[in-house]
Length: 363
Image (cartoon, rainbow, N blue to C red; front, side):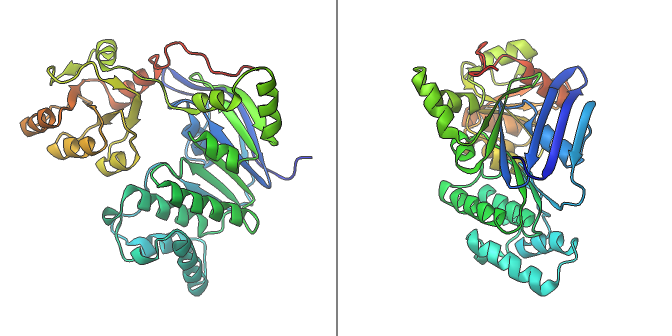
């Protein structure tokens, strides 16, 4: 029997211009649940969290959240204040909830200790790695003792050991304070380990393809009896888009390749959208296209560290000559387009990265 309802999304639709993102999405989170959302890159998972947080509104349908509950939100990208050190970043959030200073200090010291960050309280965000910044993001959300916790790929920049420790912190707090968690993740293993319910989403226009509830082992055994490898199929479904050739992207979007002698045949997994160099470095995965308005050599240097094979300058930006020189040195393809930032993003997401491959489950 379901407990107290914390979140309800009912028949929600959302578009950005002509790009249809969410179509007839419904989901619920009840007290005591950790609910995960898994789906292809760009299908609108973050949009769902942003609607729940009240950052954006649906075009149609209803979003209901218990207003009496305190909400914490761990964003996919870093939201740390650059001119405040780690301790002051955390206290900045705590003081907005009228925490006693002594109690607040005790809470953040304990969370920093559990996350292995107690030595870095005086460090500024620019001095931290992407994984360390994400730890602080998570601590900031936990330090206010939220009733509802929204997580948008919260462990993506962390090493496995750190992620497992913080998983345990969240699970422990579920027994004491947190009443419900809604988590976006690409990690099927983590979703199985932590969740009581998993929503699988389709590609755009996005619908709920399947809902999996505990005990997961029963469904796994049923699939095995049918002669199918349940775990393998589910893991494939949770992965990012399959690769396609960069030359196909260049042709379909009509991009201008400023370094034509450099690897047009490289395969690309998808695209990562961000304006801020440091956040792209922290969050981009190997094989992504980097959409940016930055046009200096530092972009190329950072991209090479993440082995990003192509950088796309939008809004008609012209690269500096030294940027092109750096690109040739690092063997990174530089593309440019007069299209707007969001127009490029929308067209990339609409392209067939999946080679017409259908999701593995159908209701």
